[in-house]
Amino acid sequence: MNIIAFNGSPRAGGNTELLLSETLKAIDPDLHRIQLFRLNQVDIKPCQNCGGCDDTGICVIKDAMDDIYEAIRLADRIVLASPIFFFGLSAQTKIMIDRCQAFWCEKYLLKKTYTSEPHGRKGLLLLVGGMKSDTGIRCGEATARAFFRSISVPEHETLGFLNVDAKGSIVDHPTAFQQGFEAGARLVK
Image 1 (cartoon, helix red, strand yellow):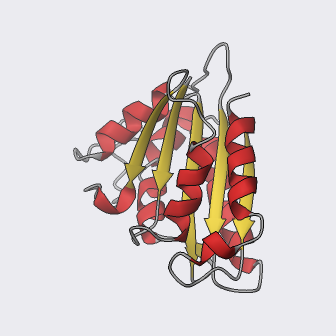
Image 2 (cartoon, rainbow, N blue to C red; image 1 turned 180 degrees about the vertical axis):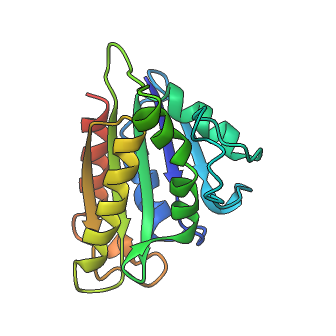
């Protein structure tokens, strides 16, 4: 299977990256191709809402997002990992999602979808936030649900961890790494 993972955290070695790394350990690289995008290091411009993709489903902005489009088209499994900032996904994550307007146009205006045979397409959402309230998890999940739906991923699992703020503090969470690893294993079953 082709698996792509998006690390939407700007903080190297932070909680989101640590959780994503543990999740990907469950996926055997000898059996599956894993491609990781560290969104903070990818040079992509924000969506301009210019309508350039309306008739073709192809974004008119040419940048590193072209590689992401290709990876999404070929993916069987997609992992999206983001910290929660101000009750939502990180800017790095959101800029990539917004640029997937081209997929929305393909699917809803041009009536094209992507399927992956024989595996189907599935997703996994990993969210980490410092707050105690689950509002950020719910808001981030709503955005991710729209993203997955637009890129023709009909089902995804969400893991959200709250009250995890200081860099690296997720290692002290009693179940986060185990839950992440198990979710990674379920993703490729």
